[in-house]
Structure formats: structure tokens, C-alpha cells
Length: 175
Image (cartoon, rainbow, N blue to C red; front, side, top):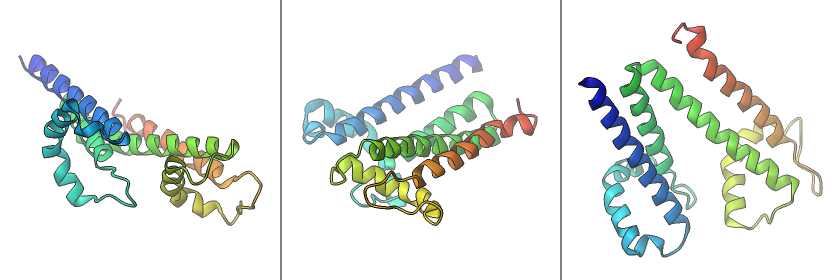
């Protein structure tokens, strides 16, 4: 009986995560949230995202509340599935590191192909990854016309941290 309730809860959480992802995609395209489907998605998600926005406001025009909401829901799903709060916390850290790895890879890609630095997506990626690349500027200073190696070094360090976090449950004997 509890297995079927758990399965139902996990299914509902996954559906809500998909709705949050659709809302994020709609928010990237002007006018999509004002369509009929957009209004339904807004009504379905605003009750959940409004408290998160109060705690984590949009920075520089970038609203990351849906990302935080998705991470919280994934942690809740892991906690419901396994009943282990430590595993859920490790999963949250793992998801955050994975997201940073993806952003750093995109930044390296943008740097390799010399993407337009004034494009909004390029600026968002650069601003969100600069705190991770900045500690490596002493070893890899940015020079005009050359490839920026600091994000590559940050990628390697964050990837190593991700591997460590993914193996923490095994080190602790959790599985």
C-alpha cells in the first residue's frame, strides 16, 4: 500500500518538475507566458515559486527560482523514495555541481568559438560562471585574442568535486 502511495507521490513530483521546466522554457520566449497555455502554467506554478523568489530574488534579470524549486523537488523525491535525508542532501549538492559543470562547459564552448559577448545568453553564462573561474585568474590571466583557460581549470576542479560528492555515499557505506 505504501509502495503505491510512494509511486503516486513520485509521479506527481516528476510531473510538477516537468511543468516547471516548461515554465522556464516559456519564460525565455517573449509572449509565451501570456498565451492560454502559459497562463495555465503560471497558475499551476506560481504558488510554489513565489516563496522561493522571496528568499532568492532574481539577480541581474536572471530568475533562478525555478532551478532552486526543481532541485528542492528532486531532493524531496529522493527522500520519499529512500527515506534518507543525507542521501537527499548529497543529491542536492550533486545536482548543483552538475549544473555548474554544464554552465562551465557552455562557457568553454562559447570561448572556443568566440561567441558574441553581447548576446544575452552569452552574458548570462559568463556572469554565472565567473565566480568559479575567478580564483584561477592568477594562474591563467585573461588576454585579449587568446583562449580563456580559467573556465577550463574551474571545470576540472568542479568535476573533481562532483566525482567526490557522487562517491560520498559509498565511502559512508550508504550504498
